[in-house]
Length: 411
Image (cartoon, rainbow, N blue to C red; front, side, top):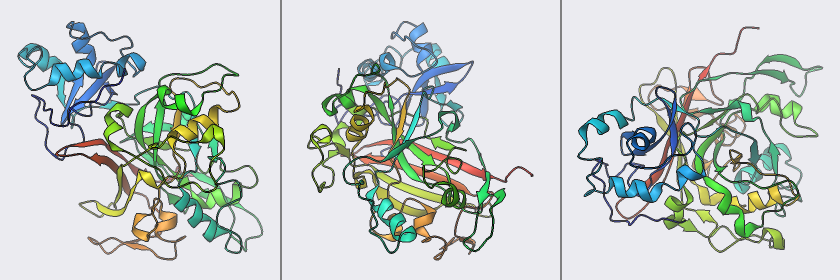
């Protein structure tokens, strides 16, 4: 059942106009509060849905993880939080148990991650990487415009926003070095991505057509697919990245439903050549989501924005990605997480990685507050992604995904 909240609806919980979490959003997440508990958020307030279920205000199947049944509660949550709804508003004791400030809420992963797939659907990023590493060849490989390139990542390394990321060790080899060395990466990087969780699945041998792909999606999160570029350069041939990306992937804690994103659908970029029939998209398979990256070093007191781009810069849509994944009959499962690939625009200030922003380290970023320079990430650096859709008088957003870099373990 689809549910779109009216654009002029307001809640009895105070929500600032620039909040990512108005009543038009009603995302789902999990808080760590006397055990893991399914929750939603309005403005700067987190609501424990287990408390509401225990009080008889709604029916909740799984109490410690977001599932399809929880996602179906958006219409009921809208009823409970609409500005003239009194069932919870006028129950002070229940409000005291169920409502907590977002600033003190401890977030967990919204769903157990069953599998993690990382696509490579940001065509501008792919072109930039091709120009850097294959300067004498076409930037895009021949298959890029025919299928959504991707690989299977490490589900156990997916972590929630706020959890720190330790600089990994790996094998690296300079161009003139006779042999590789095993050492902490010197080229730690972020990748600005988005991802979608599945709330439904398929059986082995079953093919999910593109027309049904979105029916299986729970919703979207922000994704930082951390990367060790020097490790990646040495290890990726011929099978692609492995240890360079498996050490950590950070996600934002709130799953934003497709219904909440529905008013912000847009057409994707023209695909030339046209996609094969099983990947042929609908007219509005992308979303207008504004994305920003900020960096704060250990010496800084405030974040500095270093990039701004948009989700619509992806060449392949989420539905095309999932249809491609399913096209050989691989079984899909609730809890599968699919990341988009790095989202970059066409100008330097819109790139989604340090690799591009500094053009492989040759054009360092200067931090205005301290005068420091960054080619890649240093210990103590804090990286933050934000993303939102701008409506008429409201925003539907994802909050943020943030993490601080810890030094490598001693060898």
